[in-house]
Image (cartoon, rainbow, N blue to C red; front, side, top):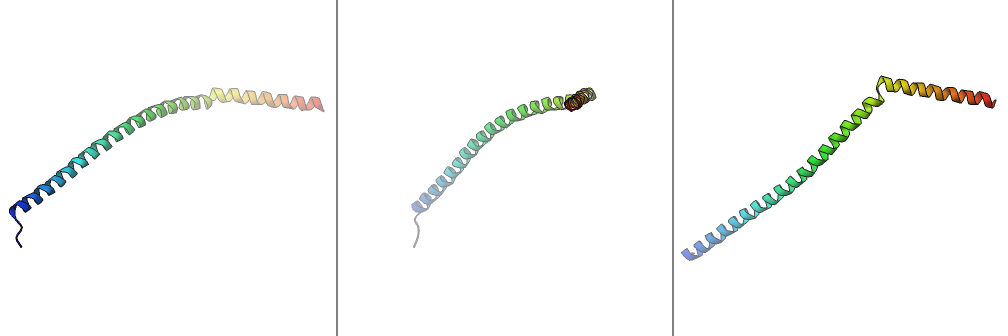
Length: 93
């Protein structure tokens, strides 16, 4: 059984159309995904910026809290509180 030239041409055209349609669909899908990834990257960059700012602020607070001068003030305050507690305990006896 011989397949006619017209049938071969129709088959070739159909397969070409399917392949081109598939490639076009793939391209559109990739562009949409690229755009969505771009939006996500933008959000993550904003989040990174705010986290870096918060980290900087926390480092400043940590440096202040652990500074020698601040620790000396805290130790003096603690010593004062302990003395007050001892004085109160002695006066209650």
